[in-house]
Image (tube, rainbow, N blue to C red):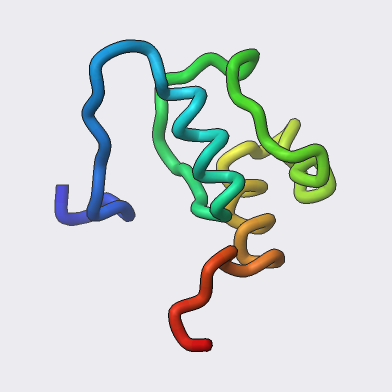
Length: 75
């Protein structure tokens, strides 16, 4: 597990994975691993410009890197 990219997780009761992925895209946090079906994942329309149909995980990282964090800590 030391080789995994994330150092955090979320545990909840119910089927809220799609909601958490939507929230992550709104906050510009890339999501690397999930088991939510593609039909239930909502990301902003502009994610398609970063290759979301061919490489959804890579597009997530590229879009978040391009737009930057929604809330910066060094203002």
